[in-house]
Amino acid sequence: MVDRQNALNYERSGEWLSLSANALASRAALAGVQQIEAGSHPHHVRQWLLALGLFPERYINRLFSVGGIQMDGKTIRLRTFIPADPAKDAVYRMAMQQREVAAGSKQLPSLSQANVLYQDDWCLVMDKPAGMPVHPNAPGQRGTLDEAAALAGIERGEHQLAKHIHRLDDDTSGPVLYARNELAQLRLDEAMREKTIGRQYVALVQGVLRKAKGTIDAPISKDRHHSARRRVTPAGSGDHAVTHYEVIASYRRATLVRLWLETGRTHQIRVHMSHLGHPLVGDTLYGGSDAKLRHQALRGEQLTFVHPWSFDTMTVHADEPSWFQEVRERYALL
Image (cartoon, rainbow, N blue to C red; front, side, top):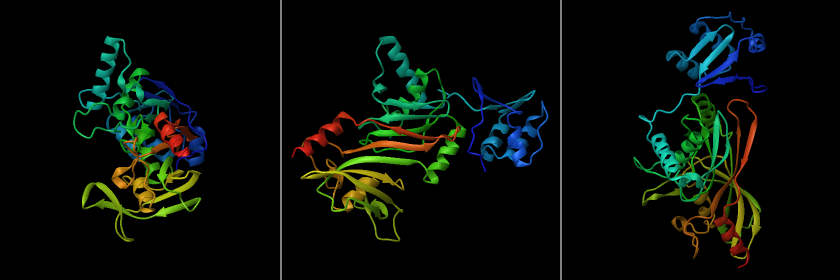
């Protein structure tokens, strides 16, 4: 079990993360593990780290297999911050090309519309604009959030590959979490499986909701009659899906609601609100409509997660985009 009360202090030198064996002495004492000798062989360092239980076994064993564990005197070094390989990763290669074009023309890359909300050695949170896909839907597709995330690191002087931990629909804006190394990815992926990453949304739905708050617990599956749609299915079939909501404001023809996802099914909020009889404004795929808005009135508002190294609780907020403000204010005046 990882001690999440106190993060380990580390120093970074390029690709390597350095830890003092002396700093780990108290952890070893708590775990009932004998202190390691200075200059120990990587095999013994691997066994010692596994006995301490500070890192995932899969991570330590993979590092050892590629020579990513060293001990210099009393300093343990782990090859953690590995740069992306342009020859192997098309998204990173395209981000590098974007940077070169921007430098040559002295213009900011178009991907700069996706703002960085937070980043450090371990993770990155991007504010995805509506209309931008998170990842390529076809080989070579440009203008994705993944590309913008890679570019954000390059602009910072970092060349680690960012891996998204969750996704948003193309037309949904809001914060998206990325891992910037393998250890962070393992821990954040685990957090997603354990449903400890909080995702908070705001939507404008058609009609007036009767209840001020509620929970929609209804399984979701693909609609066999429409390949792009999902639908609520009878209990015992489909994927388990739970959405919580509360009313922020009620208008004559619409309701502004805040929502939290307990699960993360494709189109979950859109399907569940349509199932209640209140499709999202502008969401023509699920029965919504709007004369001016050409996509659903849905935005990610806030992301909460445990930092993969410090174990601090992180809360990252995304500002309301101008398009959402416009449609919200328009319905408030109807």
